[in-house]
Amino acid sequence: MVCTGNVCRSPLTERLLATRLSQRLAERSDRVVIGSAGVRALVGSSMTVEAAGELRSLGGDATGFVSRQLTVDLLTDADLVLAATRQHRSEAVSRCPRVLRCAFTLRELHRLLADADLSGLPDDPADRVRGLVELARGRRGFVPPAEEGDDDVADPYGRSAQAYAATTRQIAPAVDFLASAIAG
Image (cartoon, rainbow, N blue to C red; front, side):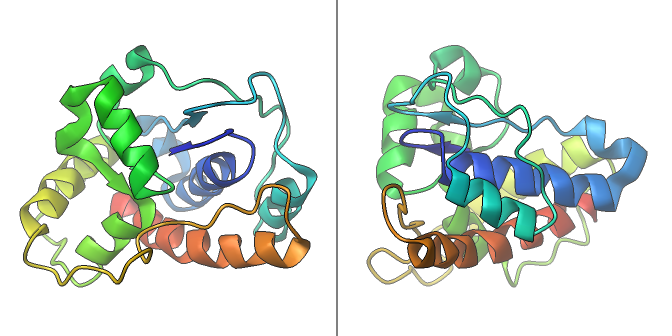
């Protein structure tokens, strides 16, 4: 997961997805490695207090999180790159053009797959991630595009608790959907 500073949106998504996959996959949750980074990361910082509070309210844990800078190595190793916004997606692709095939915004991926038939995907969680990427790629252009900004997650950094709650309301449904899709 990619955002700007890697202290709000991307770590909230990372940790919430890890929590949801752990709940759904139990011992198979190690088949999917989840991480996050920022295009202009506040390297070494923990999650903001507000983002950590939102995560806790959803059953997640921010303990030990440390922000890191997005690198080509991180991108090269990824089967799926999720970005908070279309701009973050563009920045990831410009750093590593190879990820063009597997880069989406979180909400775009949810939109593309929301009504897709996932029954033909493999049982293994890691293989399902790759299958979800292929399925989503094939649905681009066939699923009605979002309104301007609908595929983006709003940046709450430096804003009110209400802004963090609104951002969480954008992230949580997409994460829950993705966790269910990966778990089968």
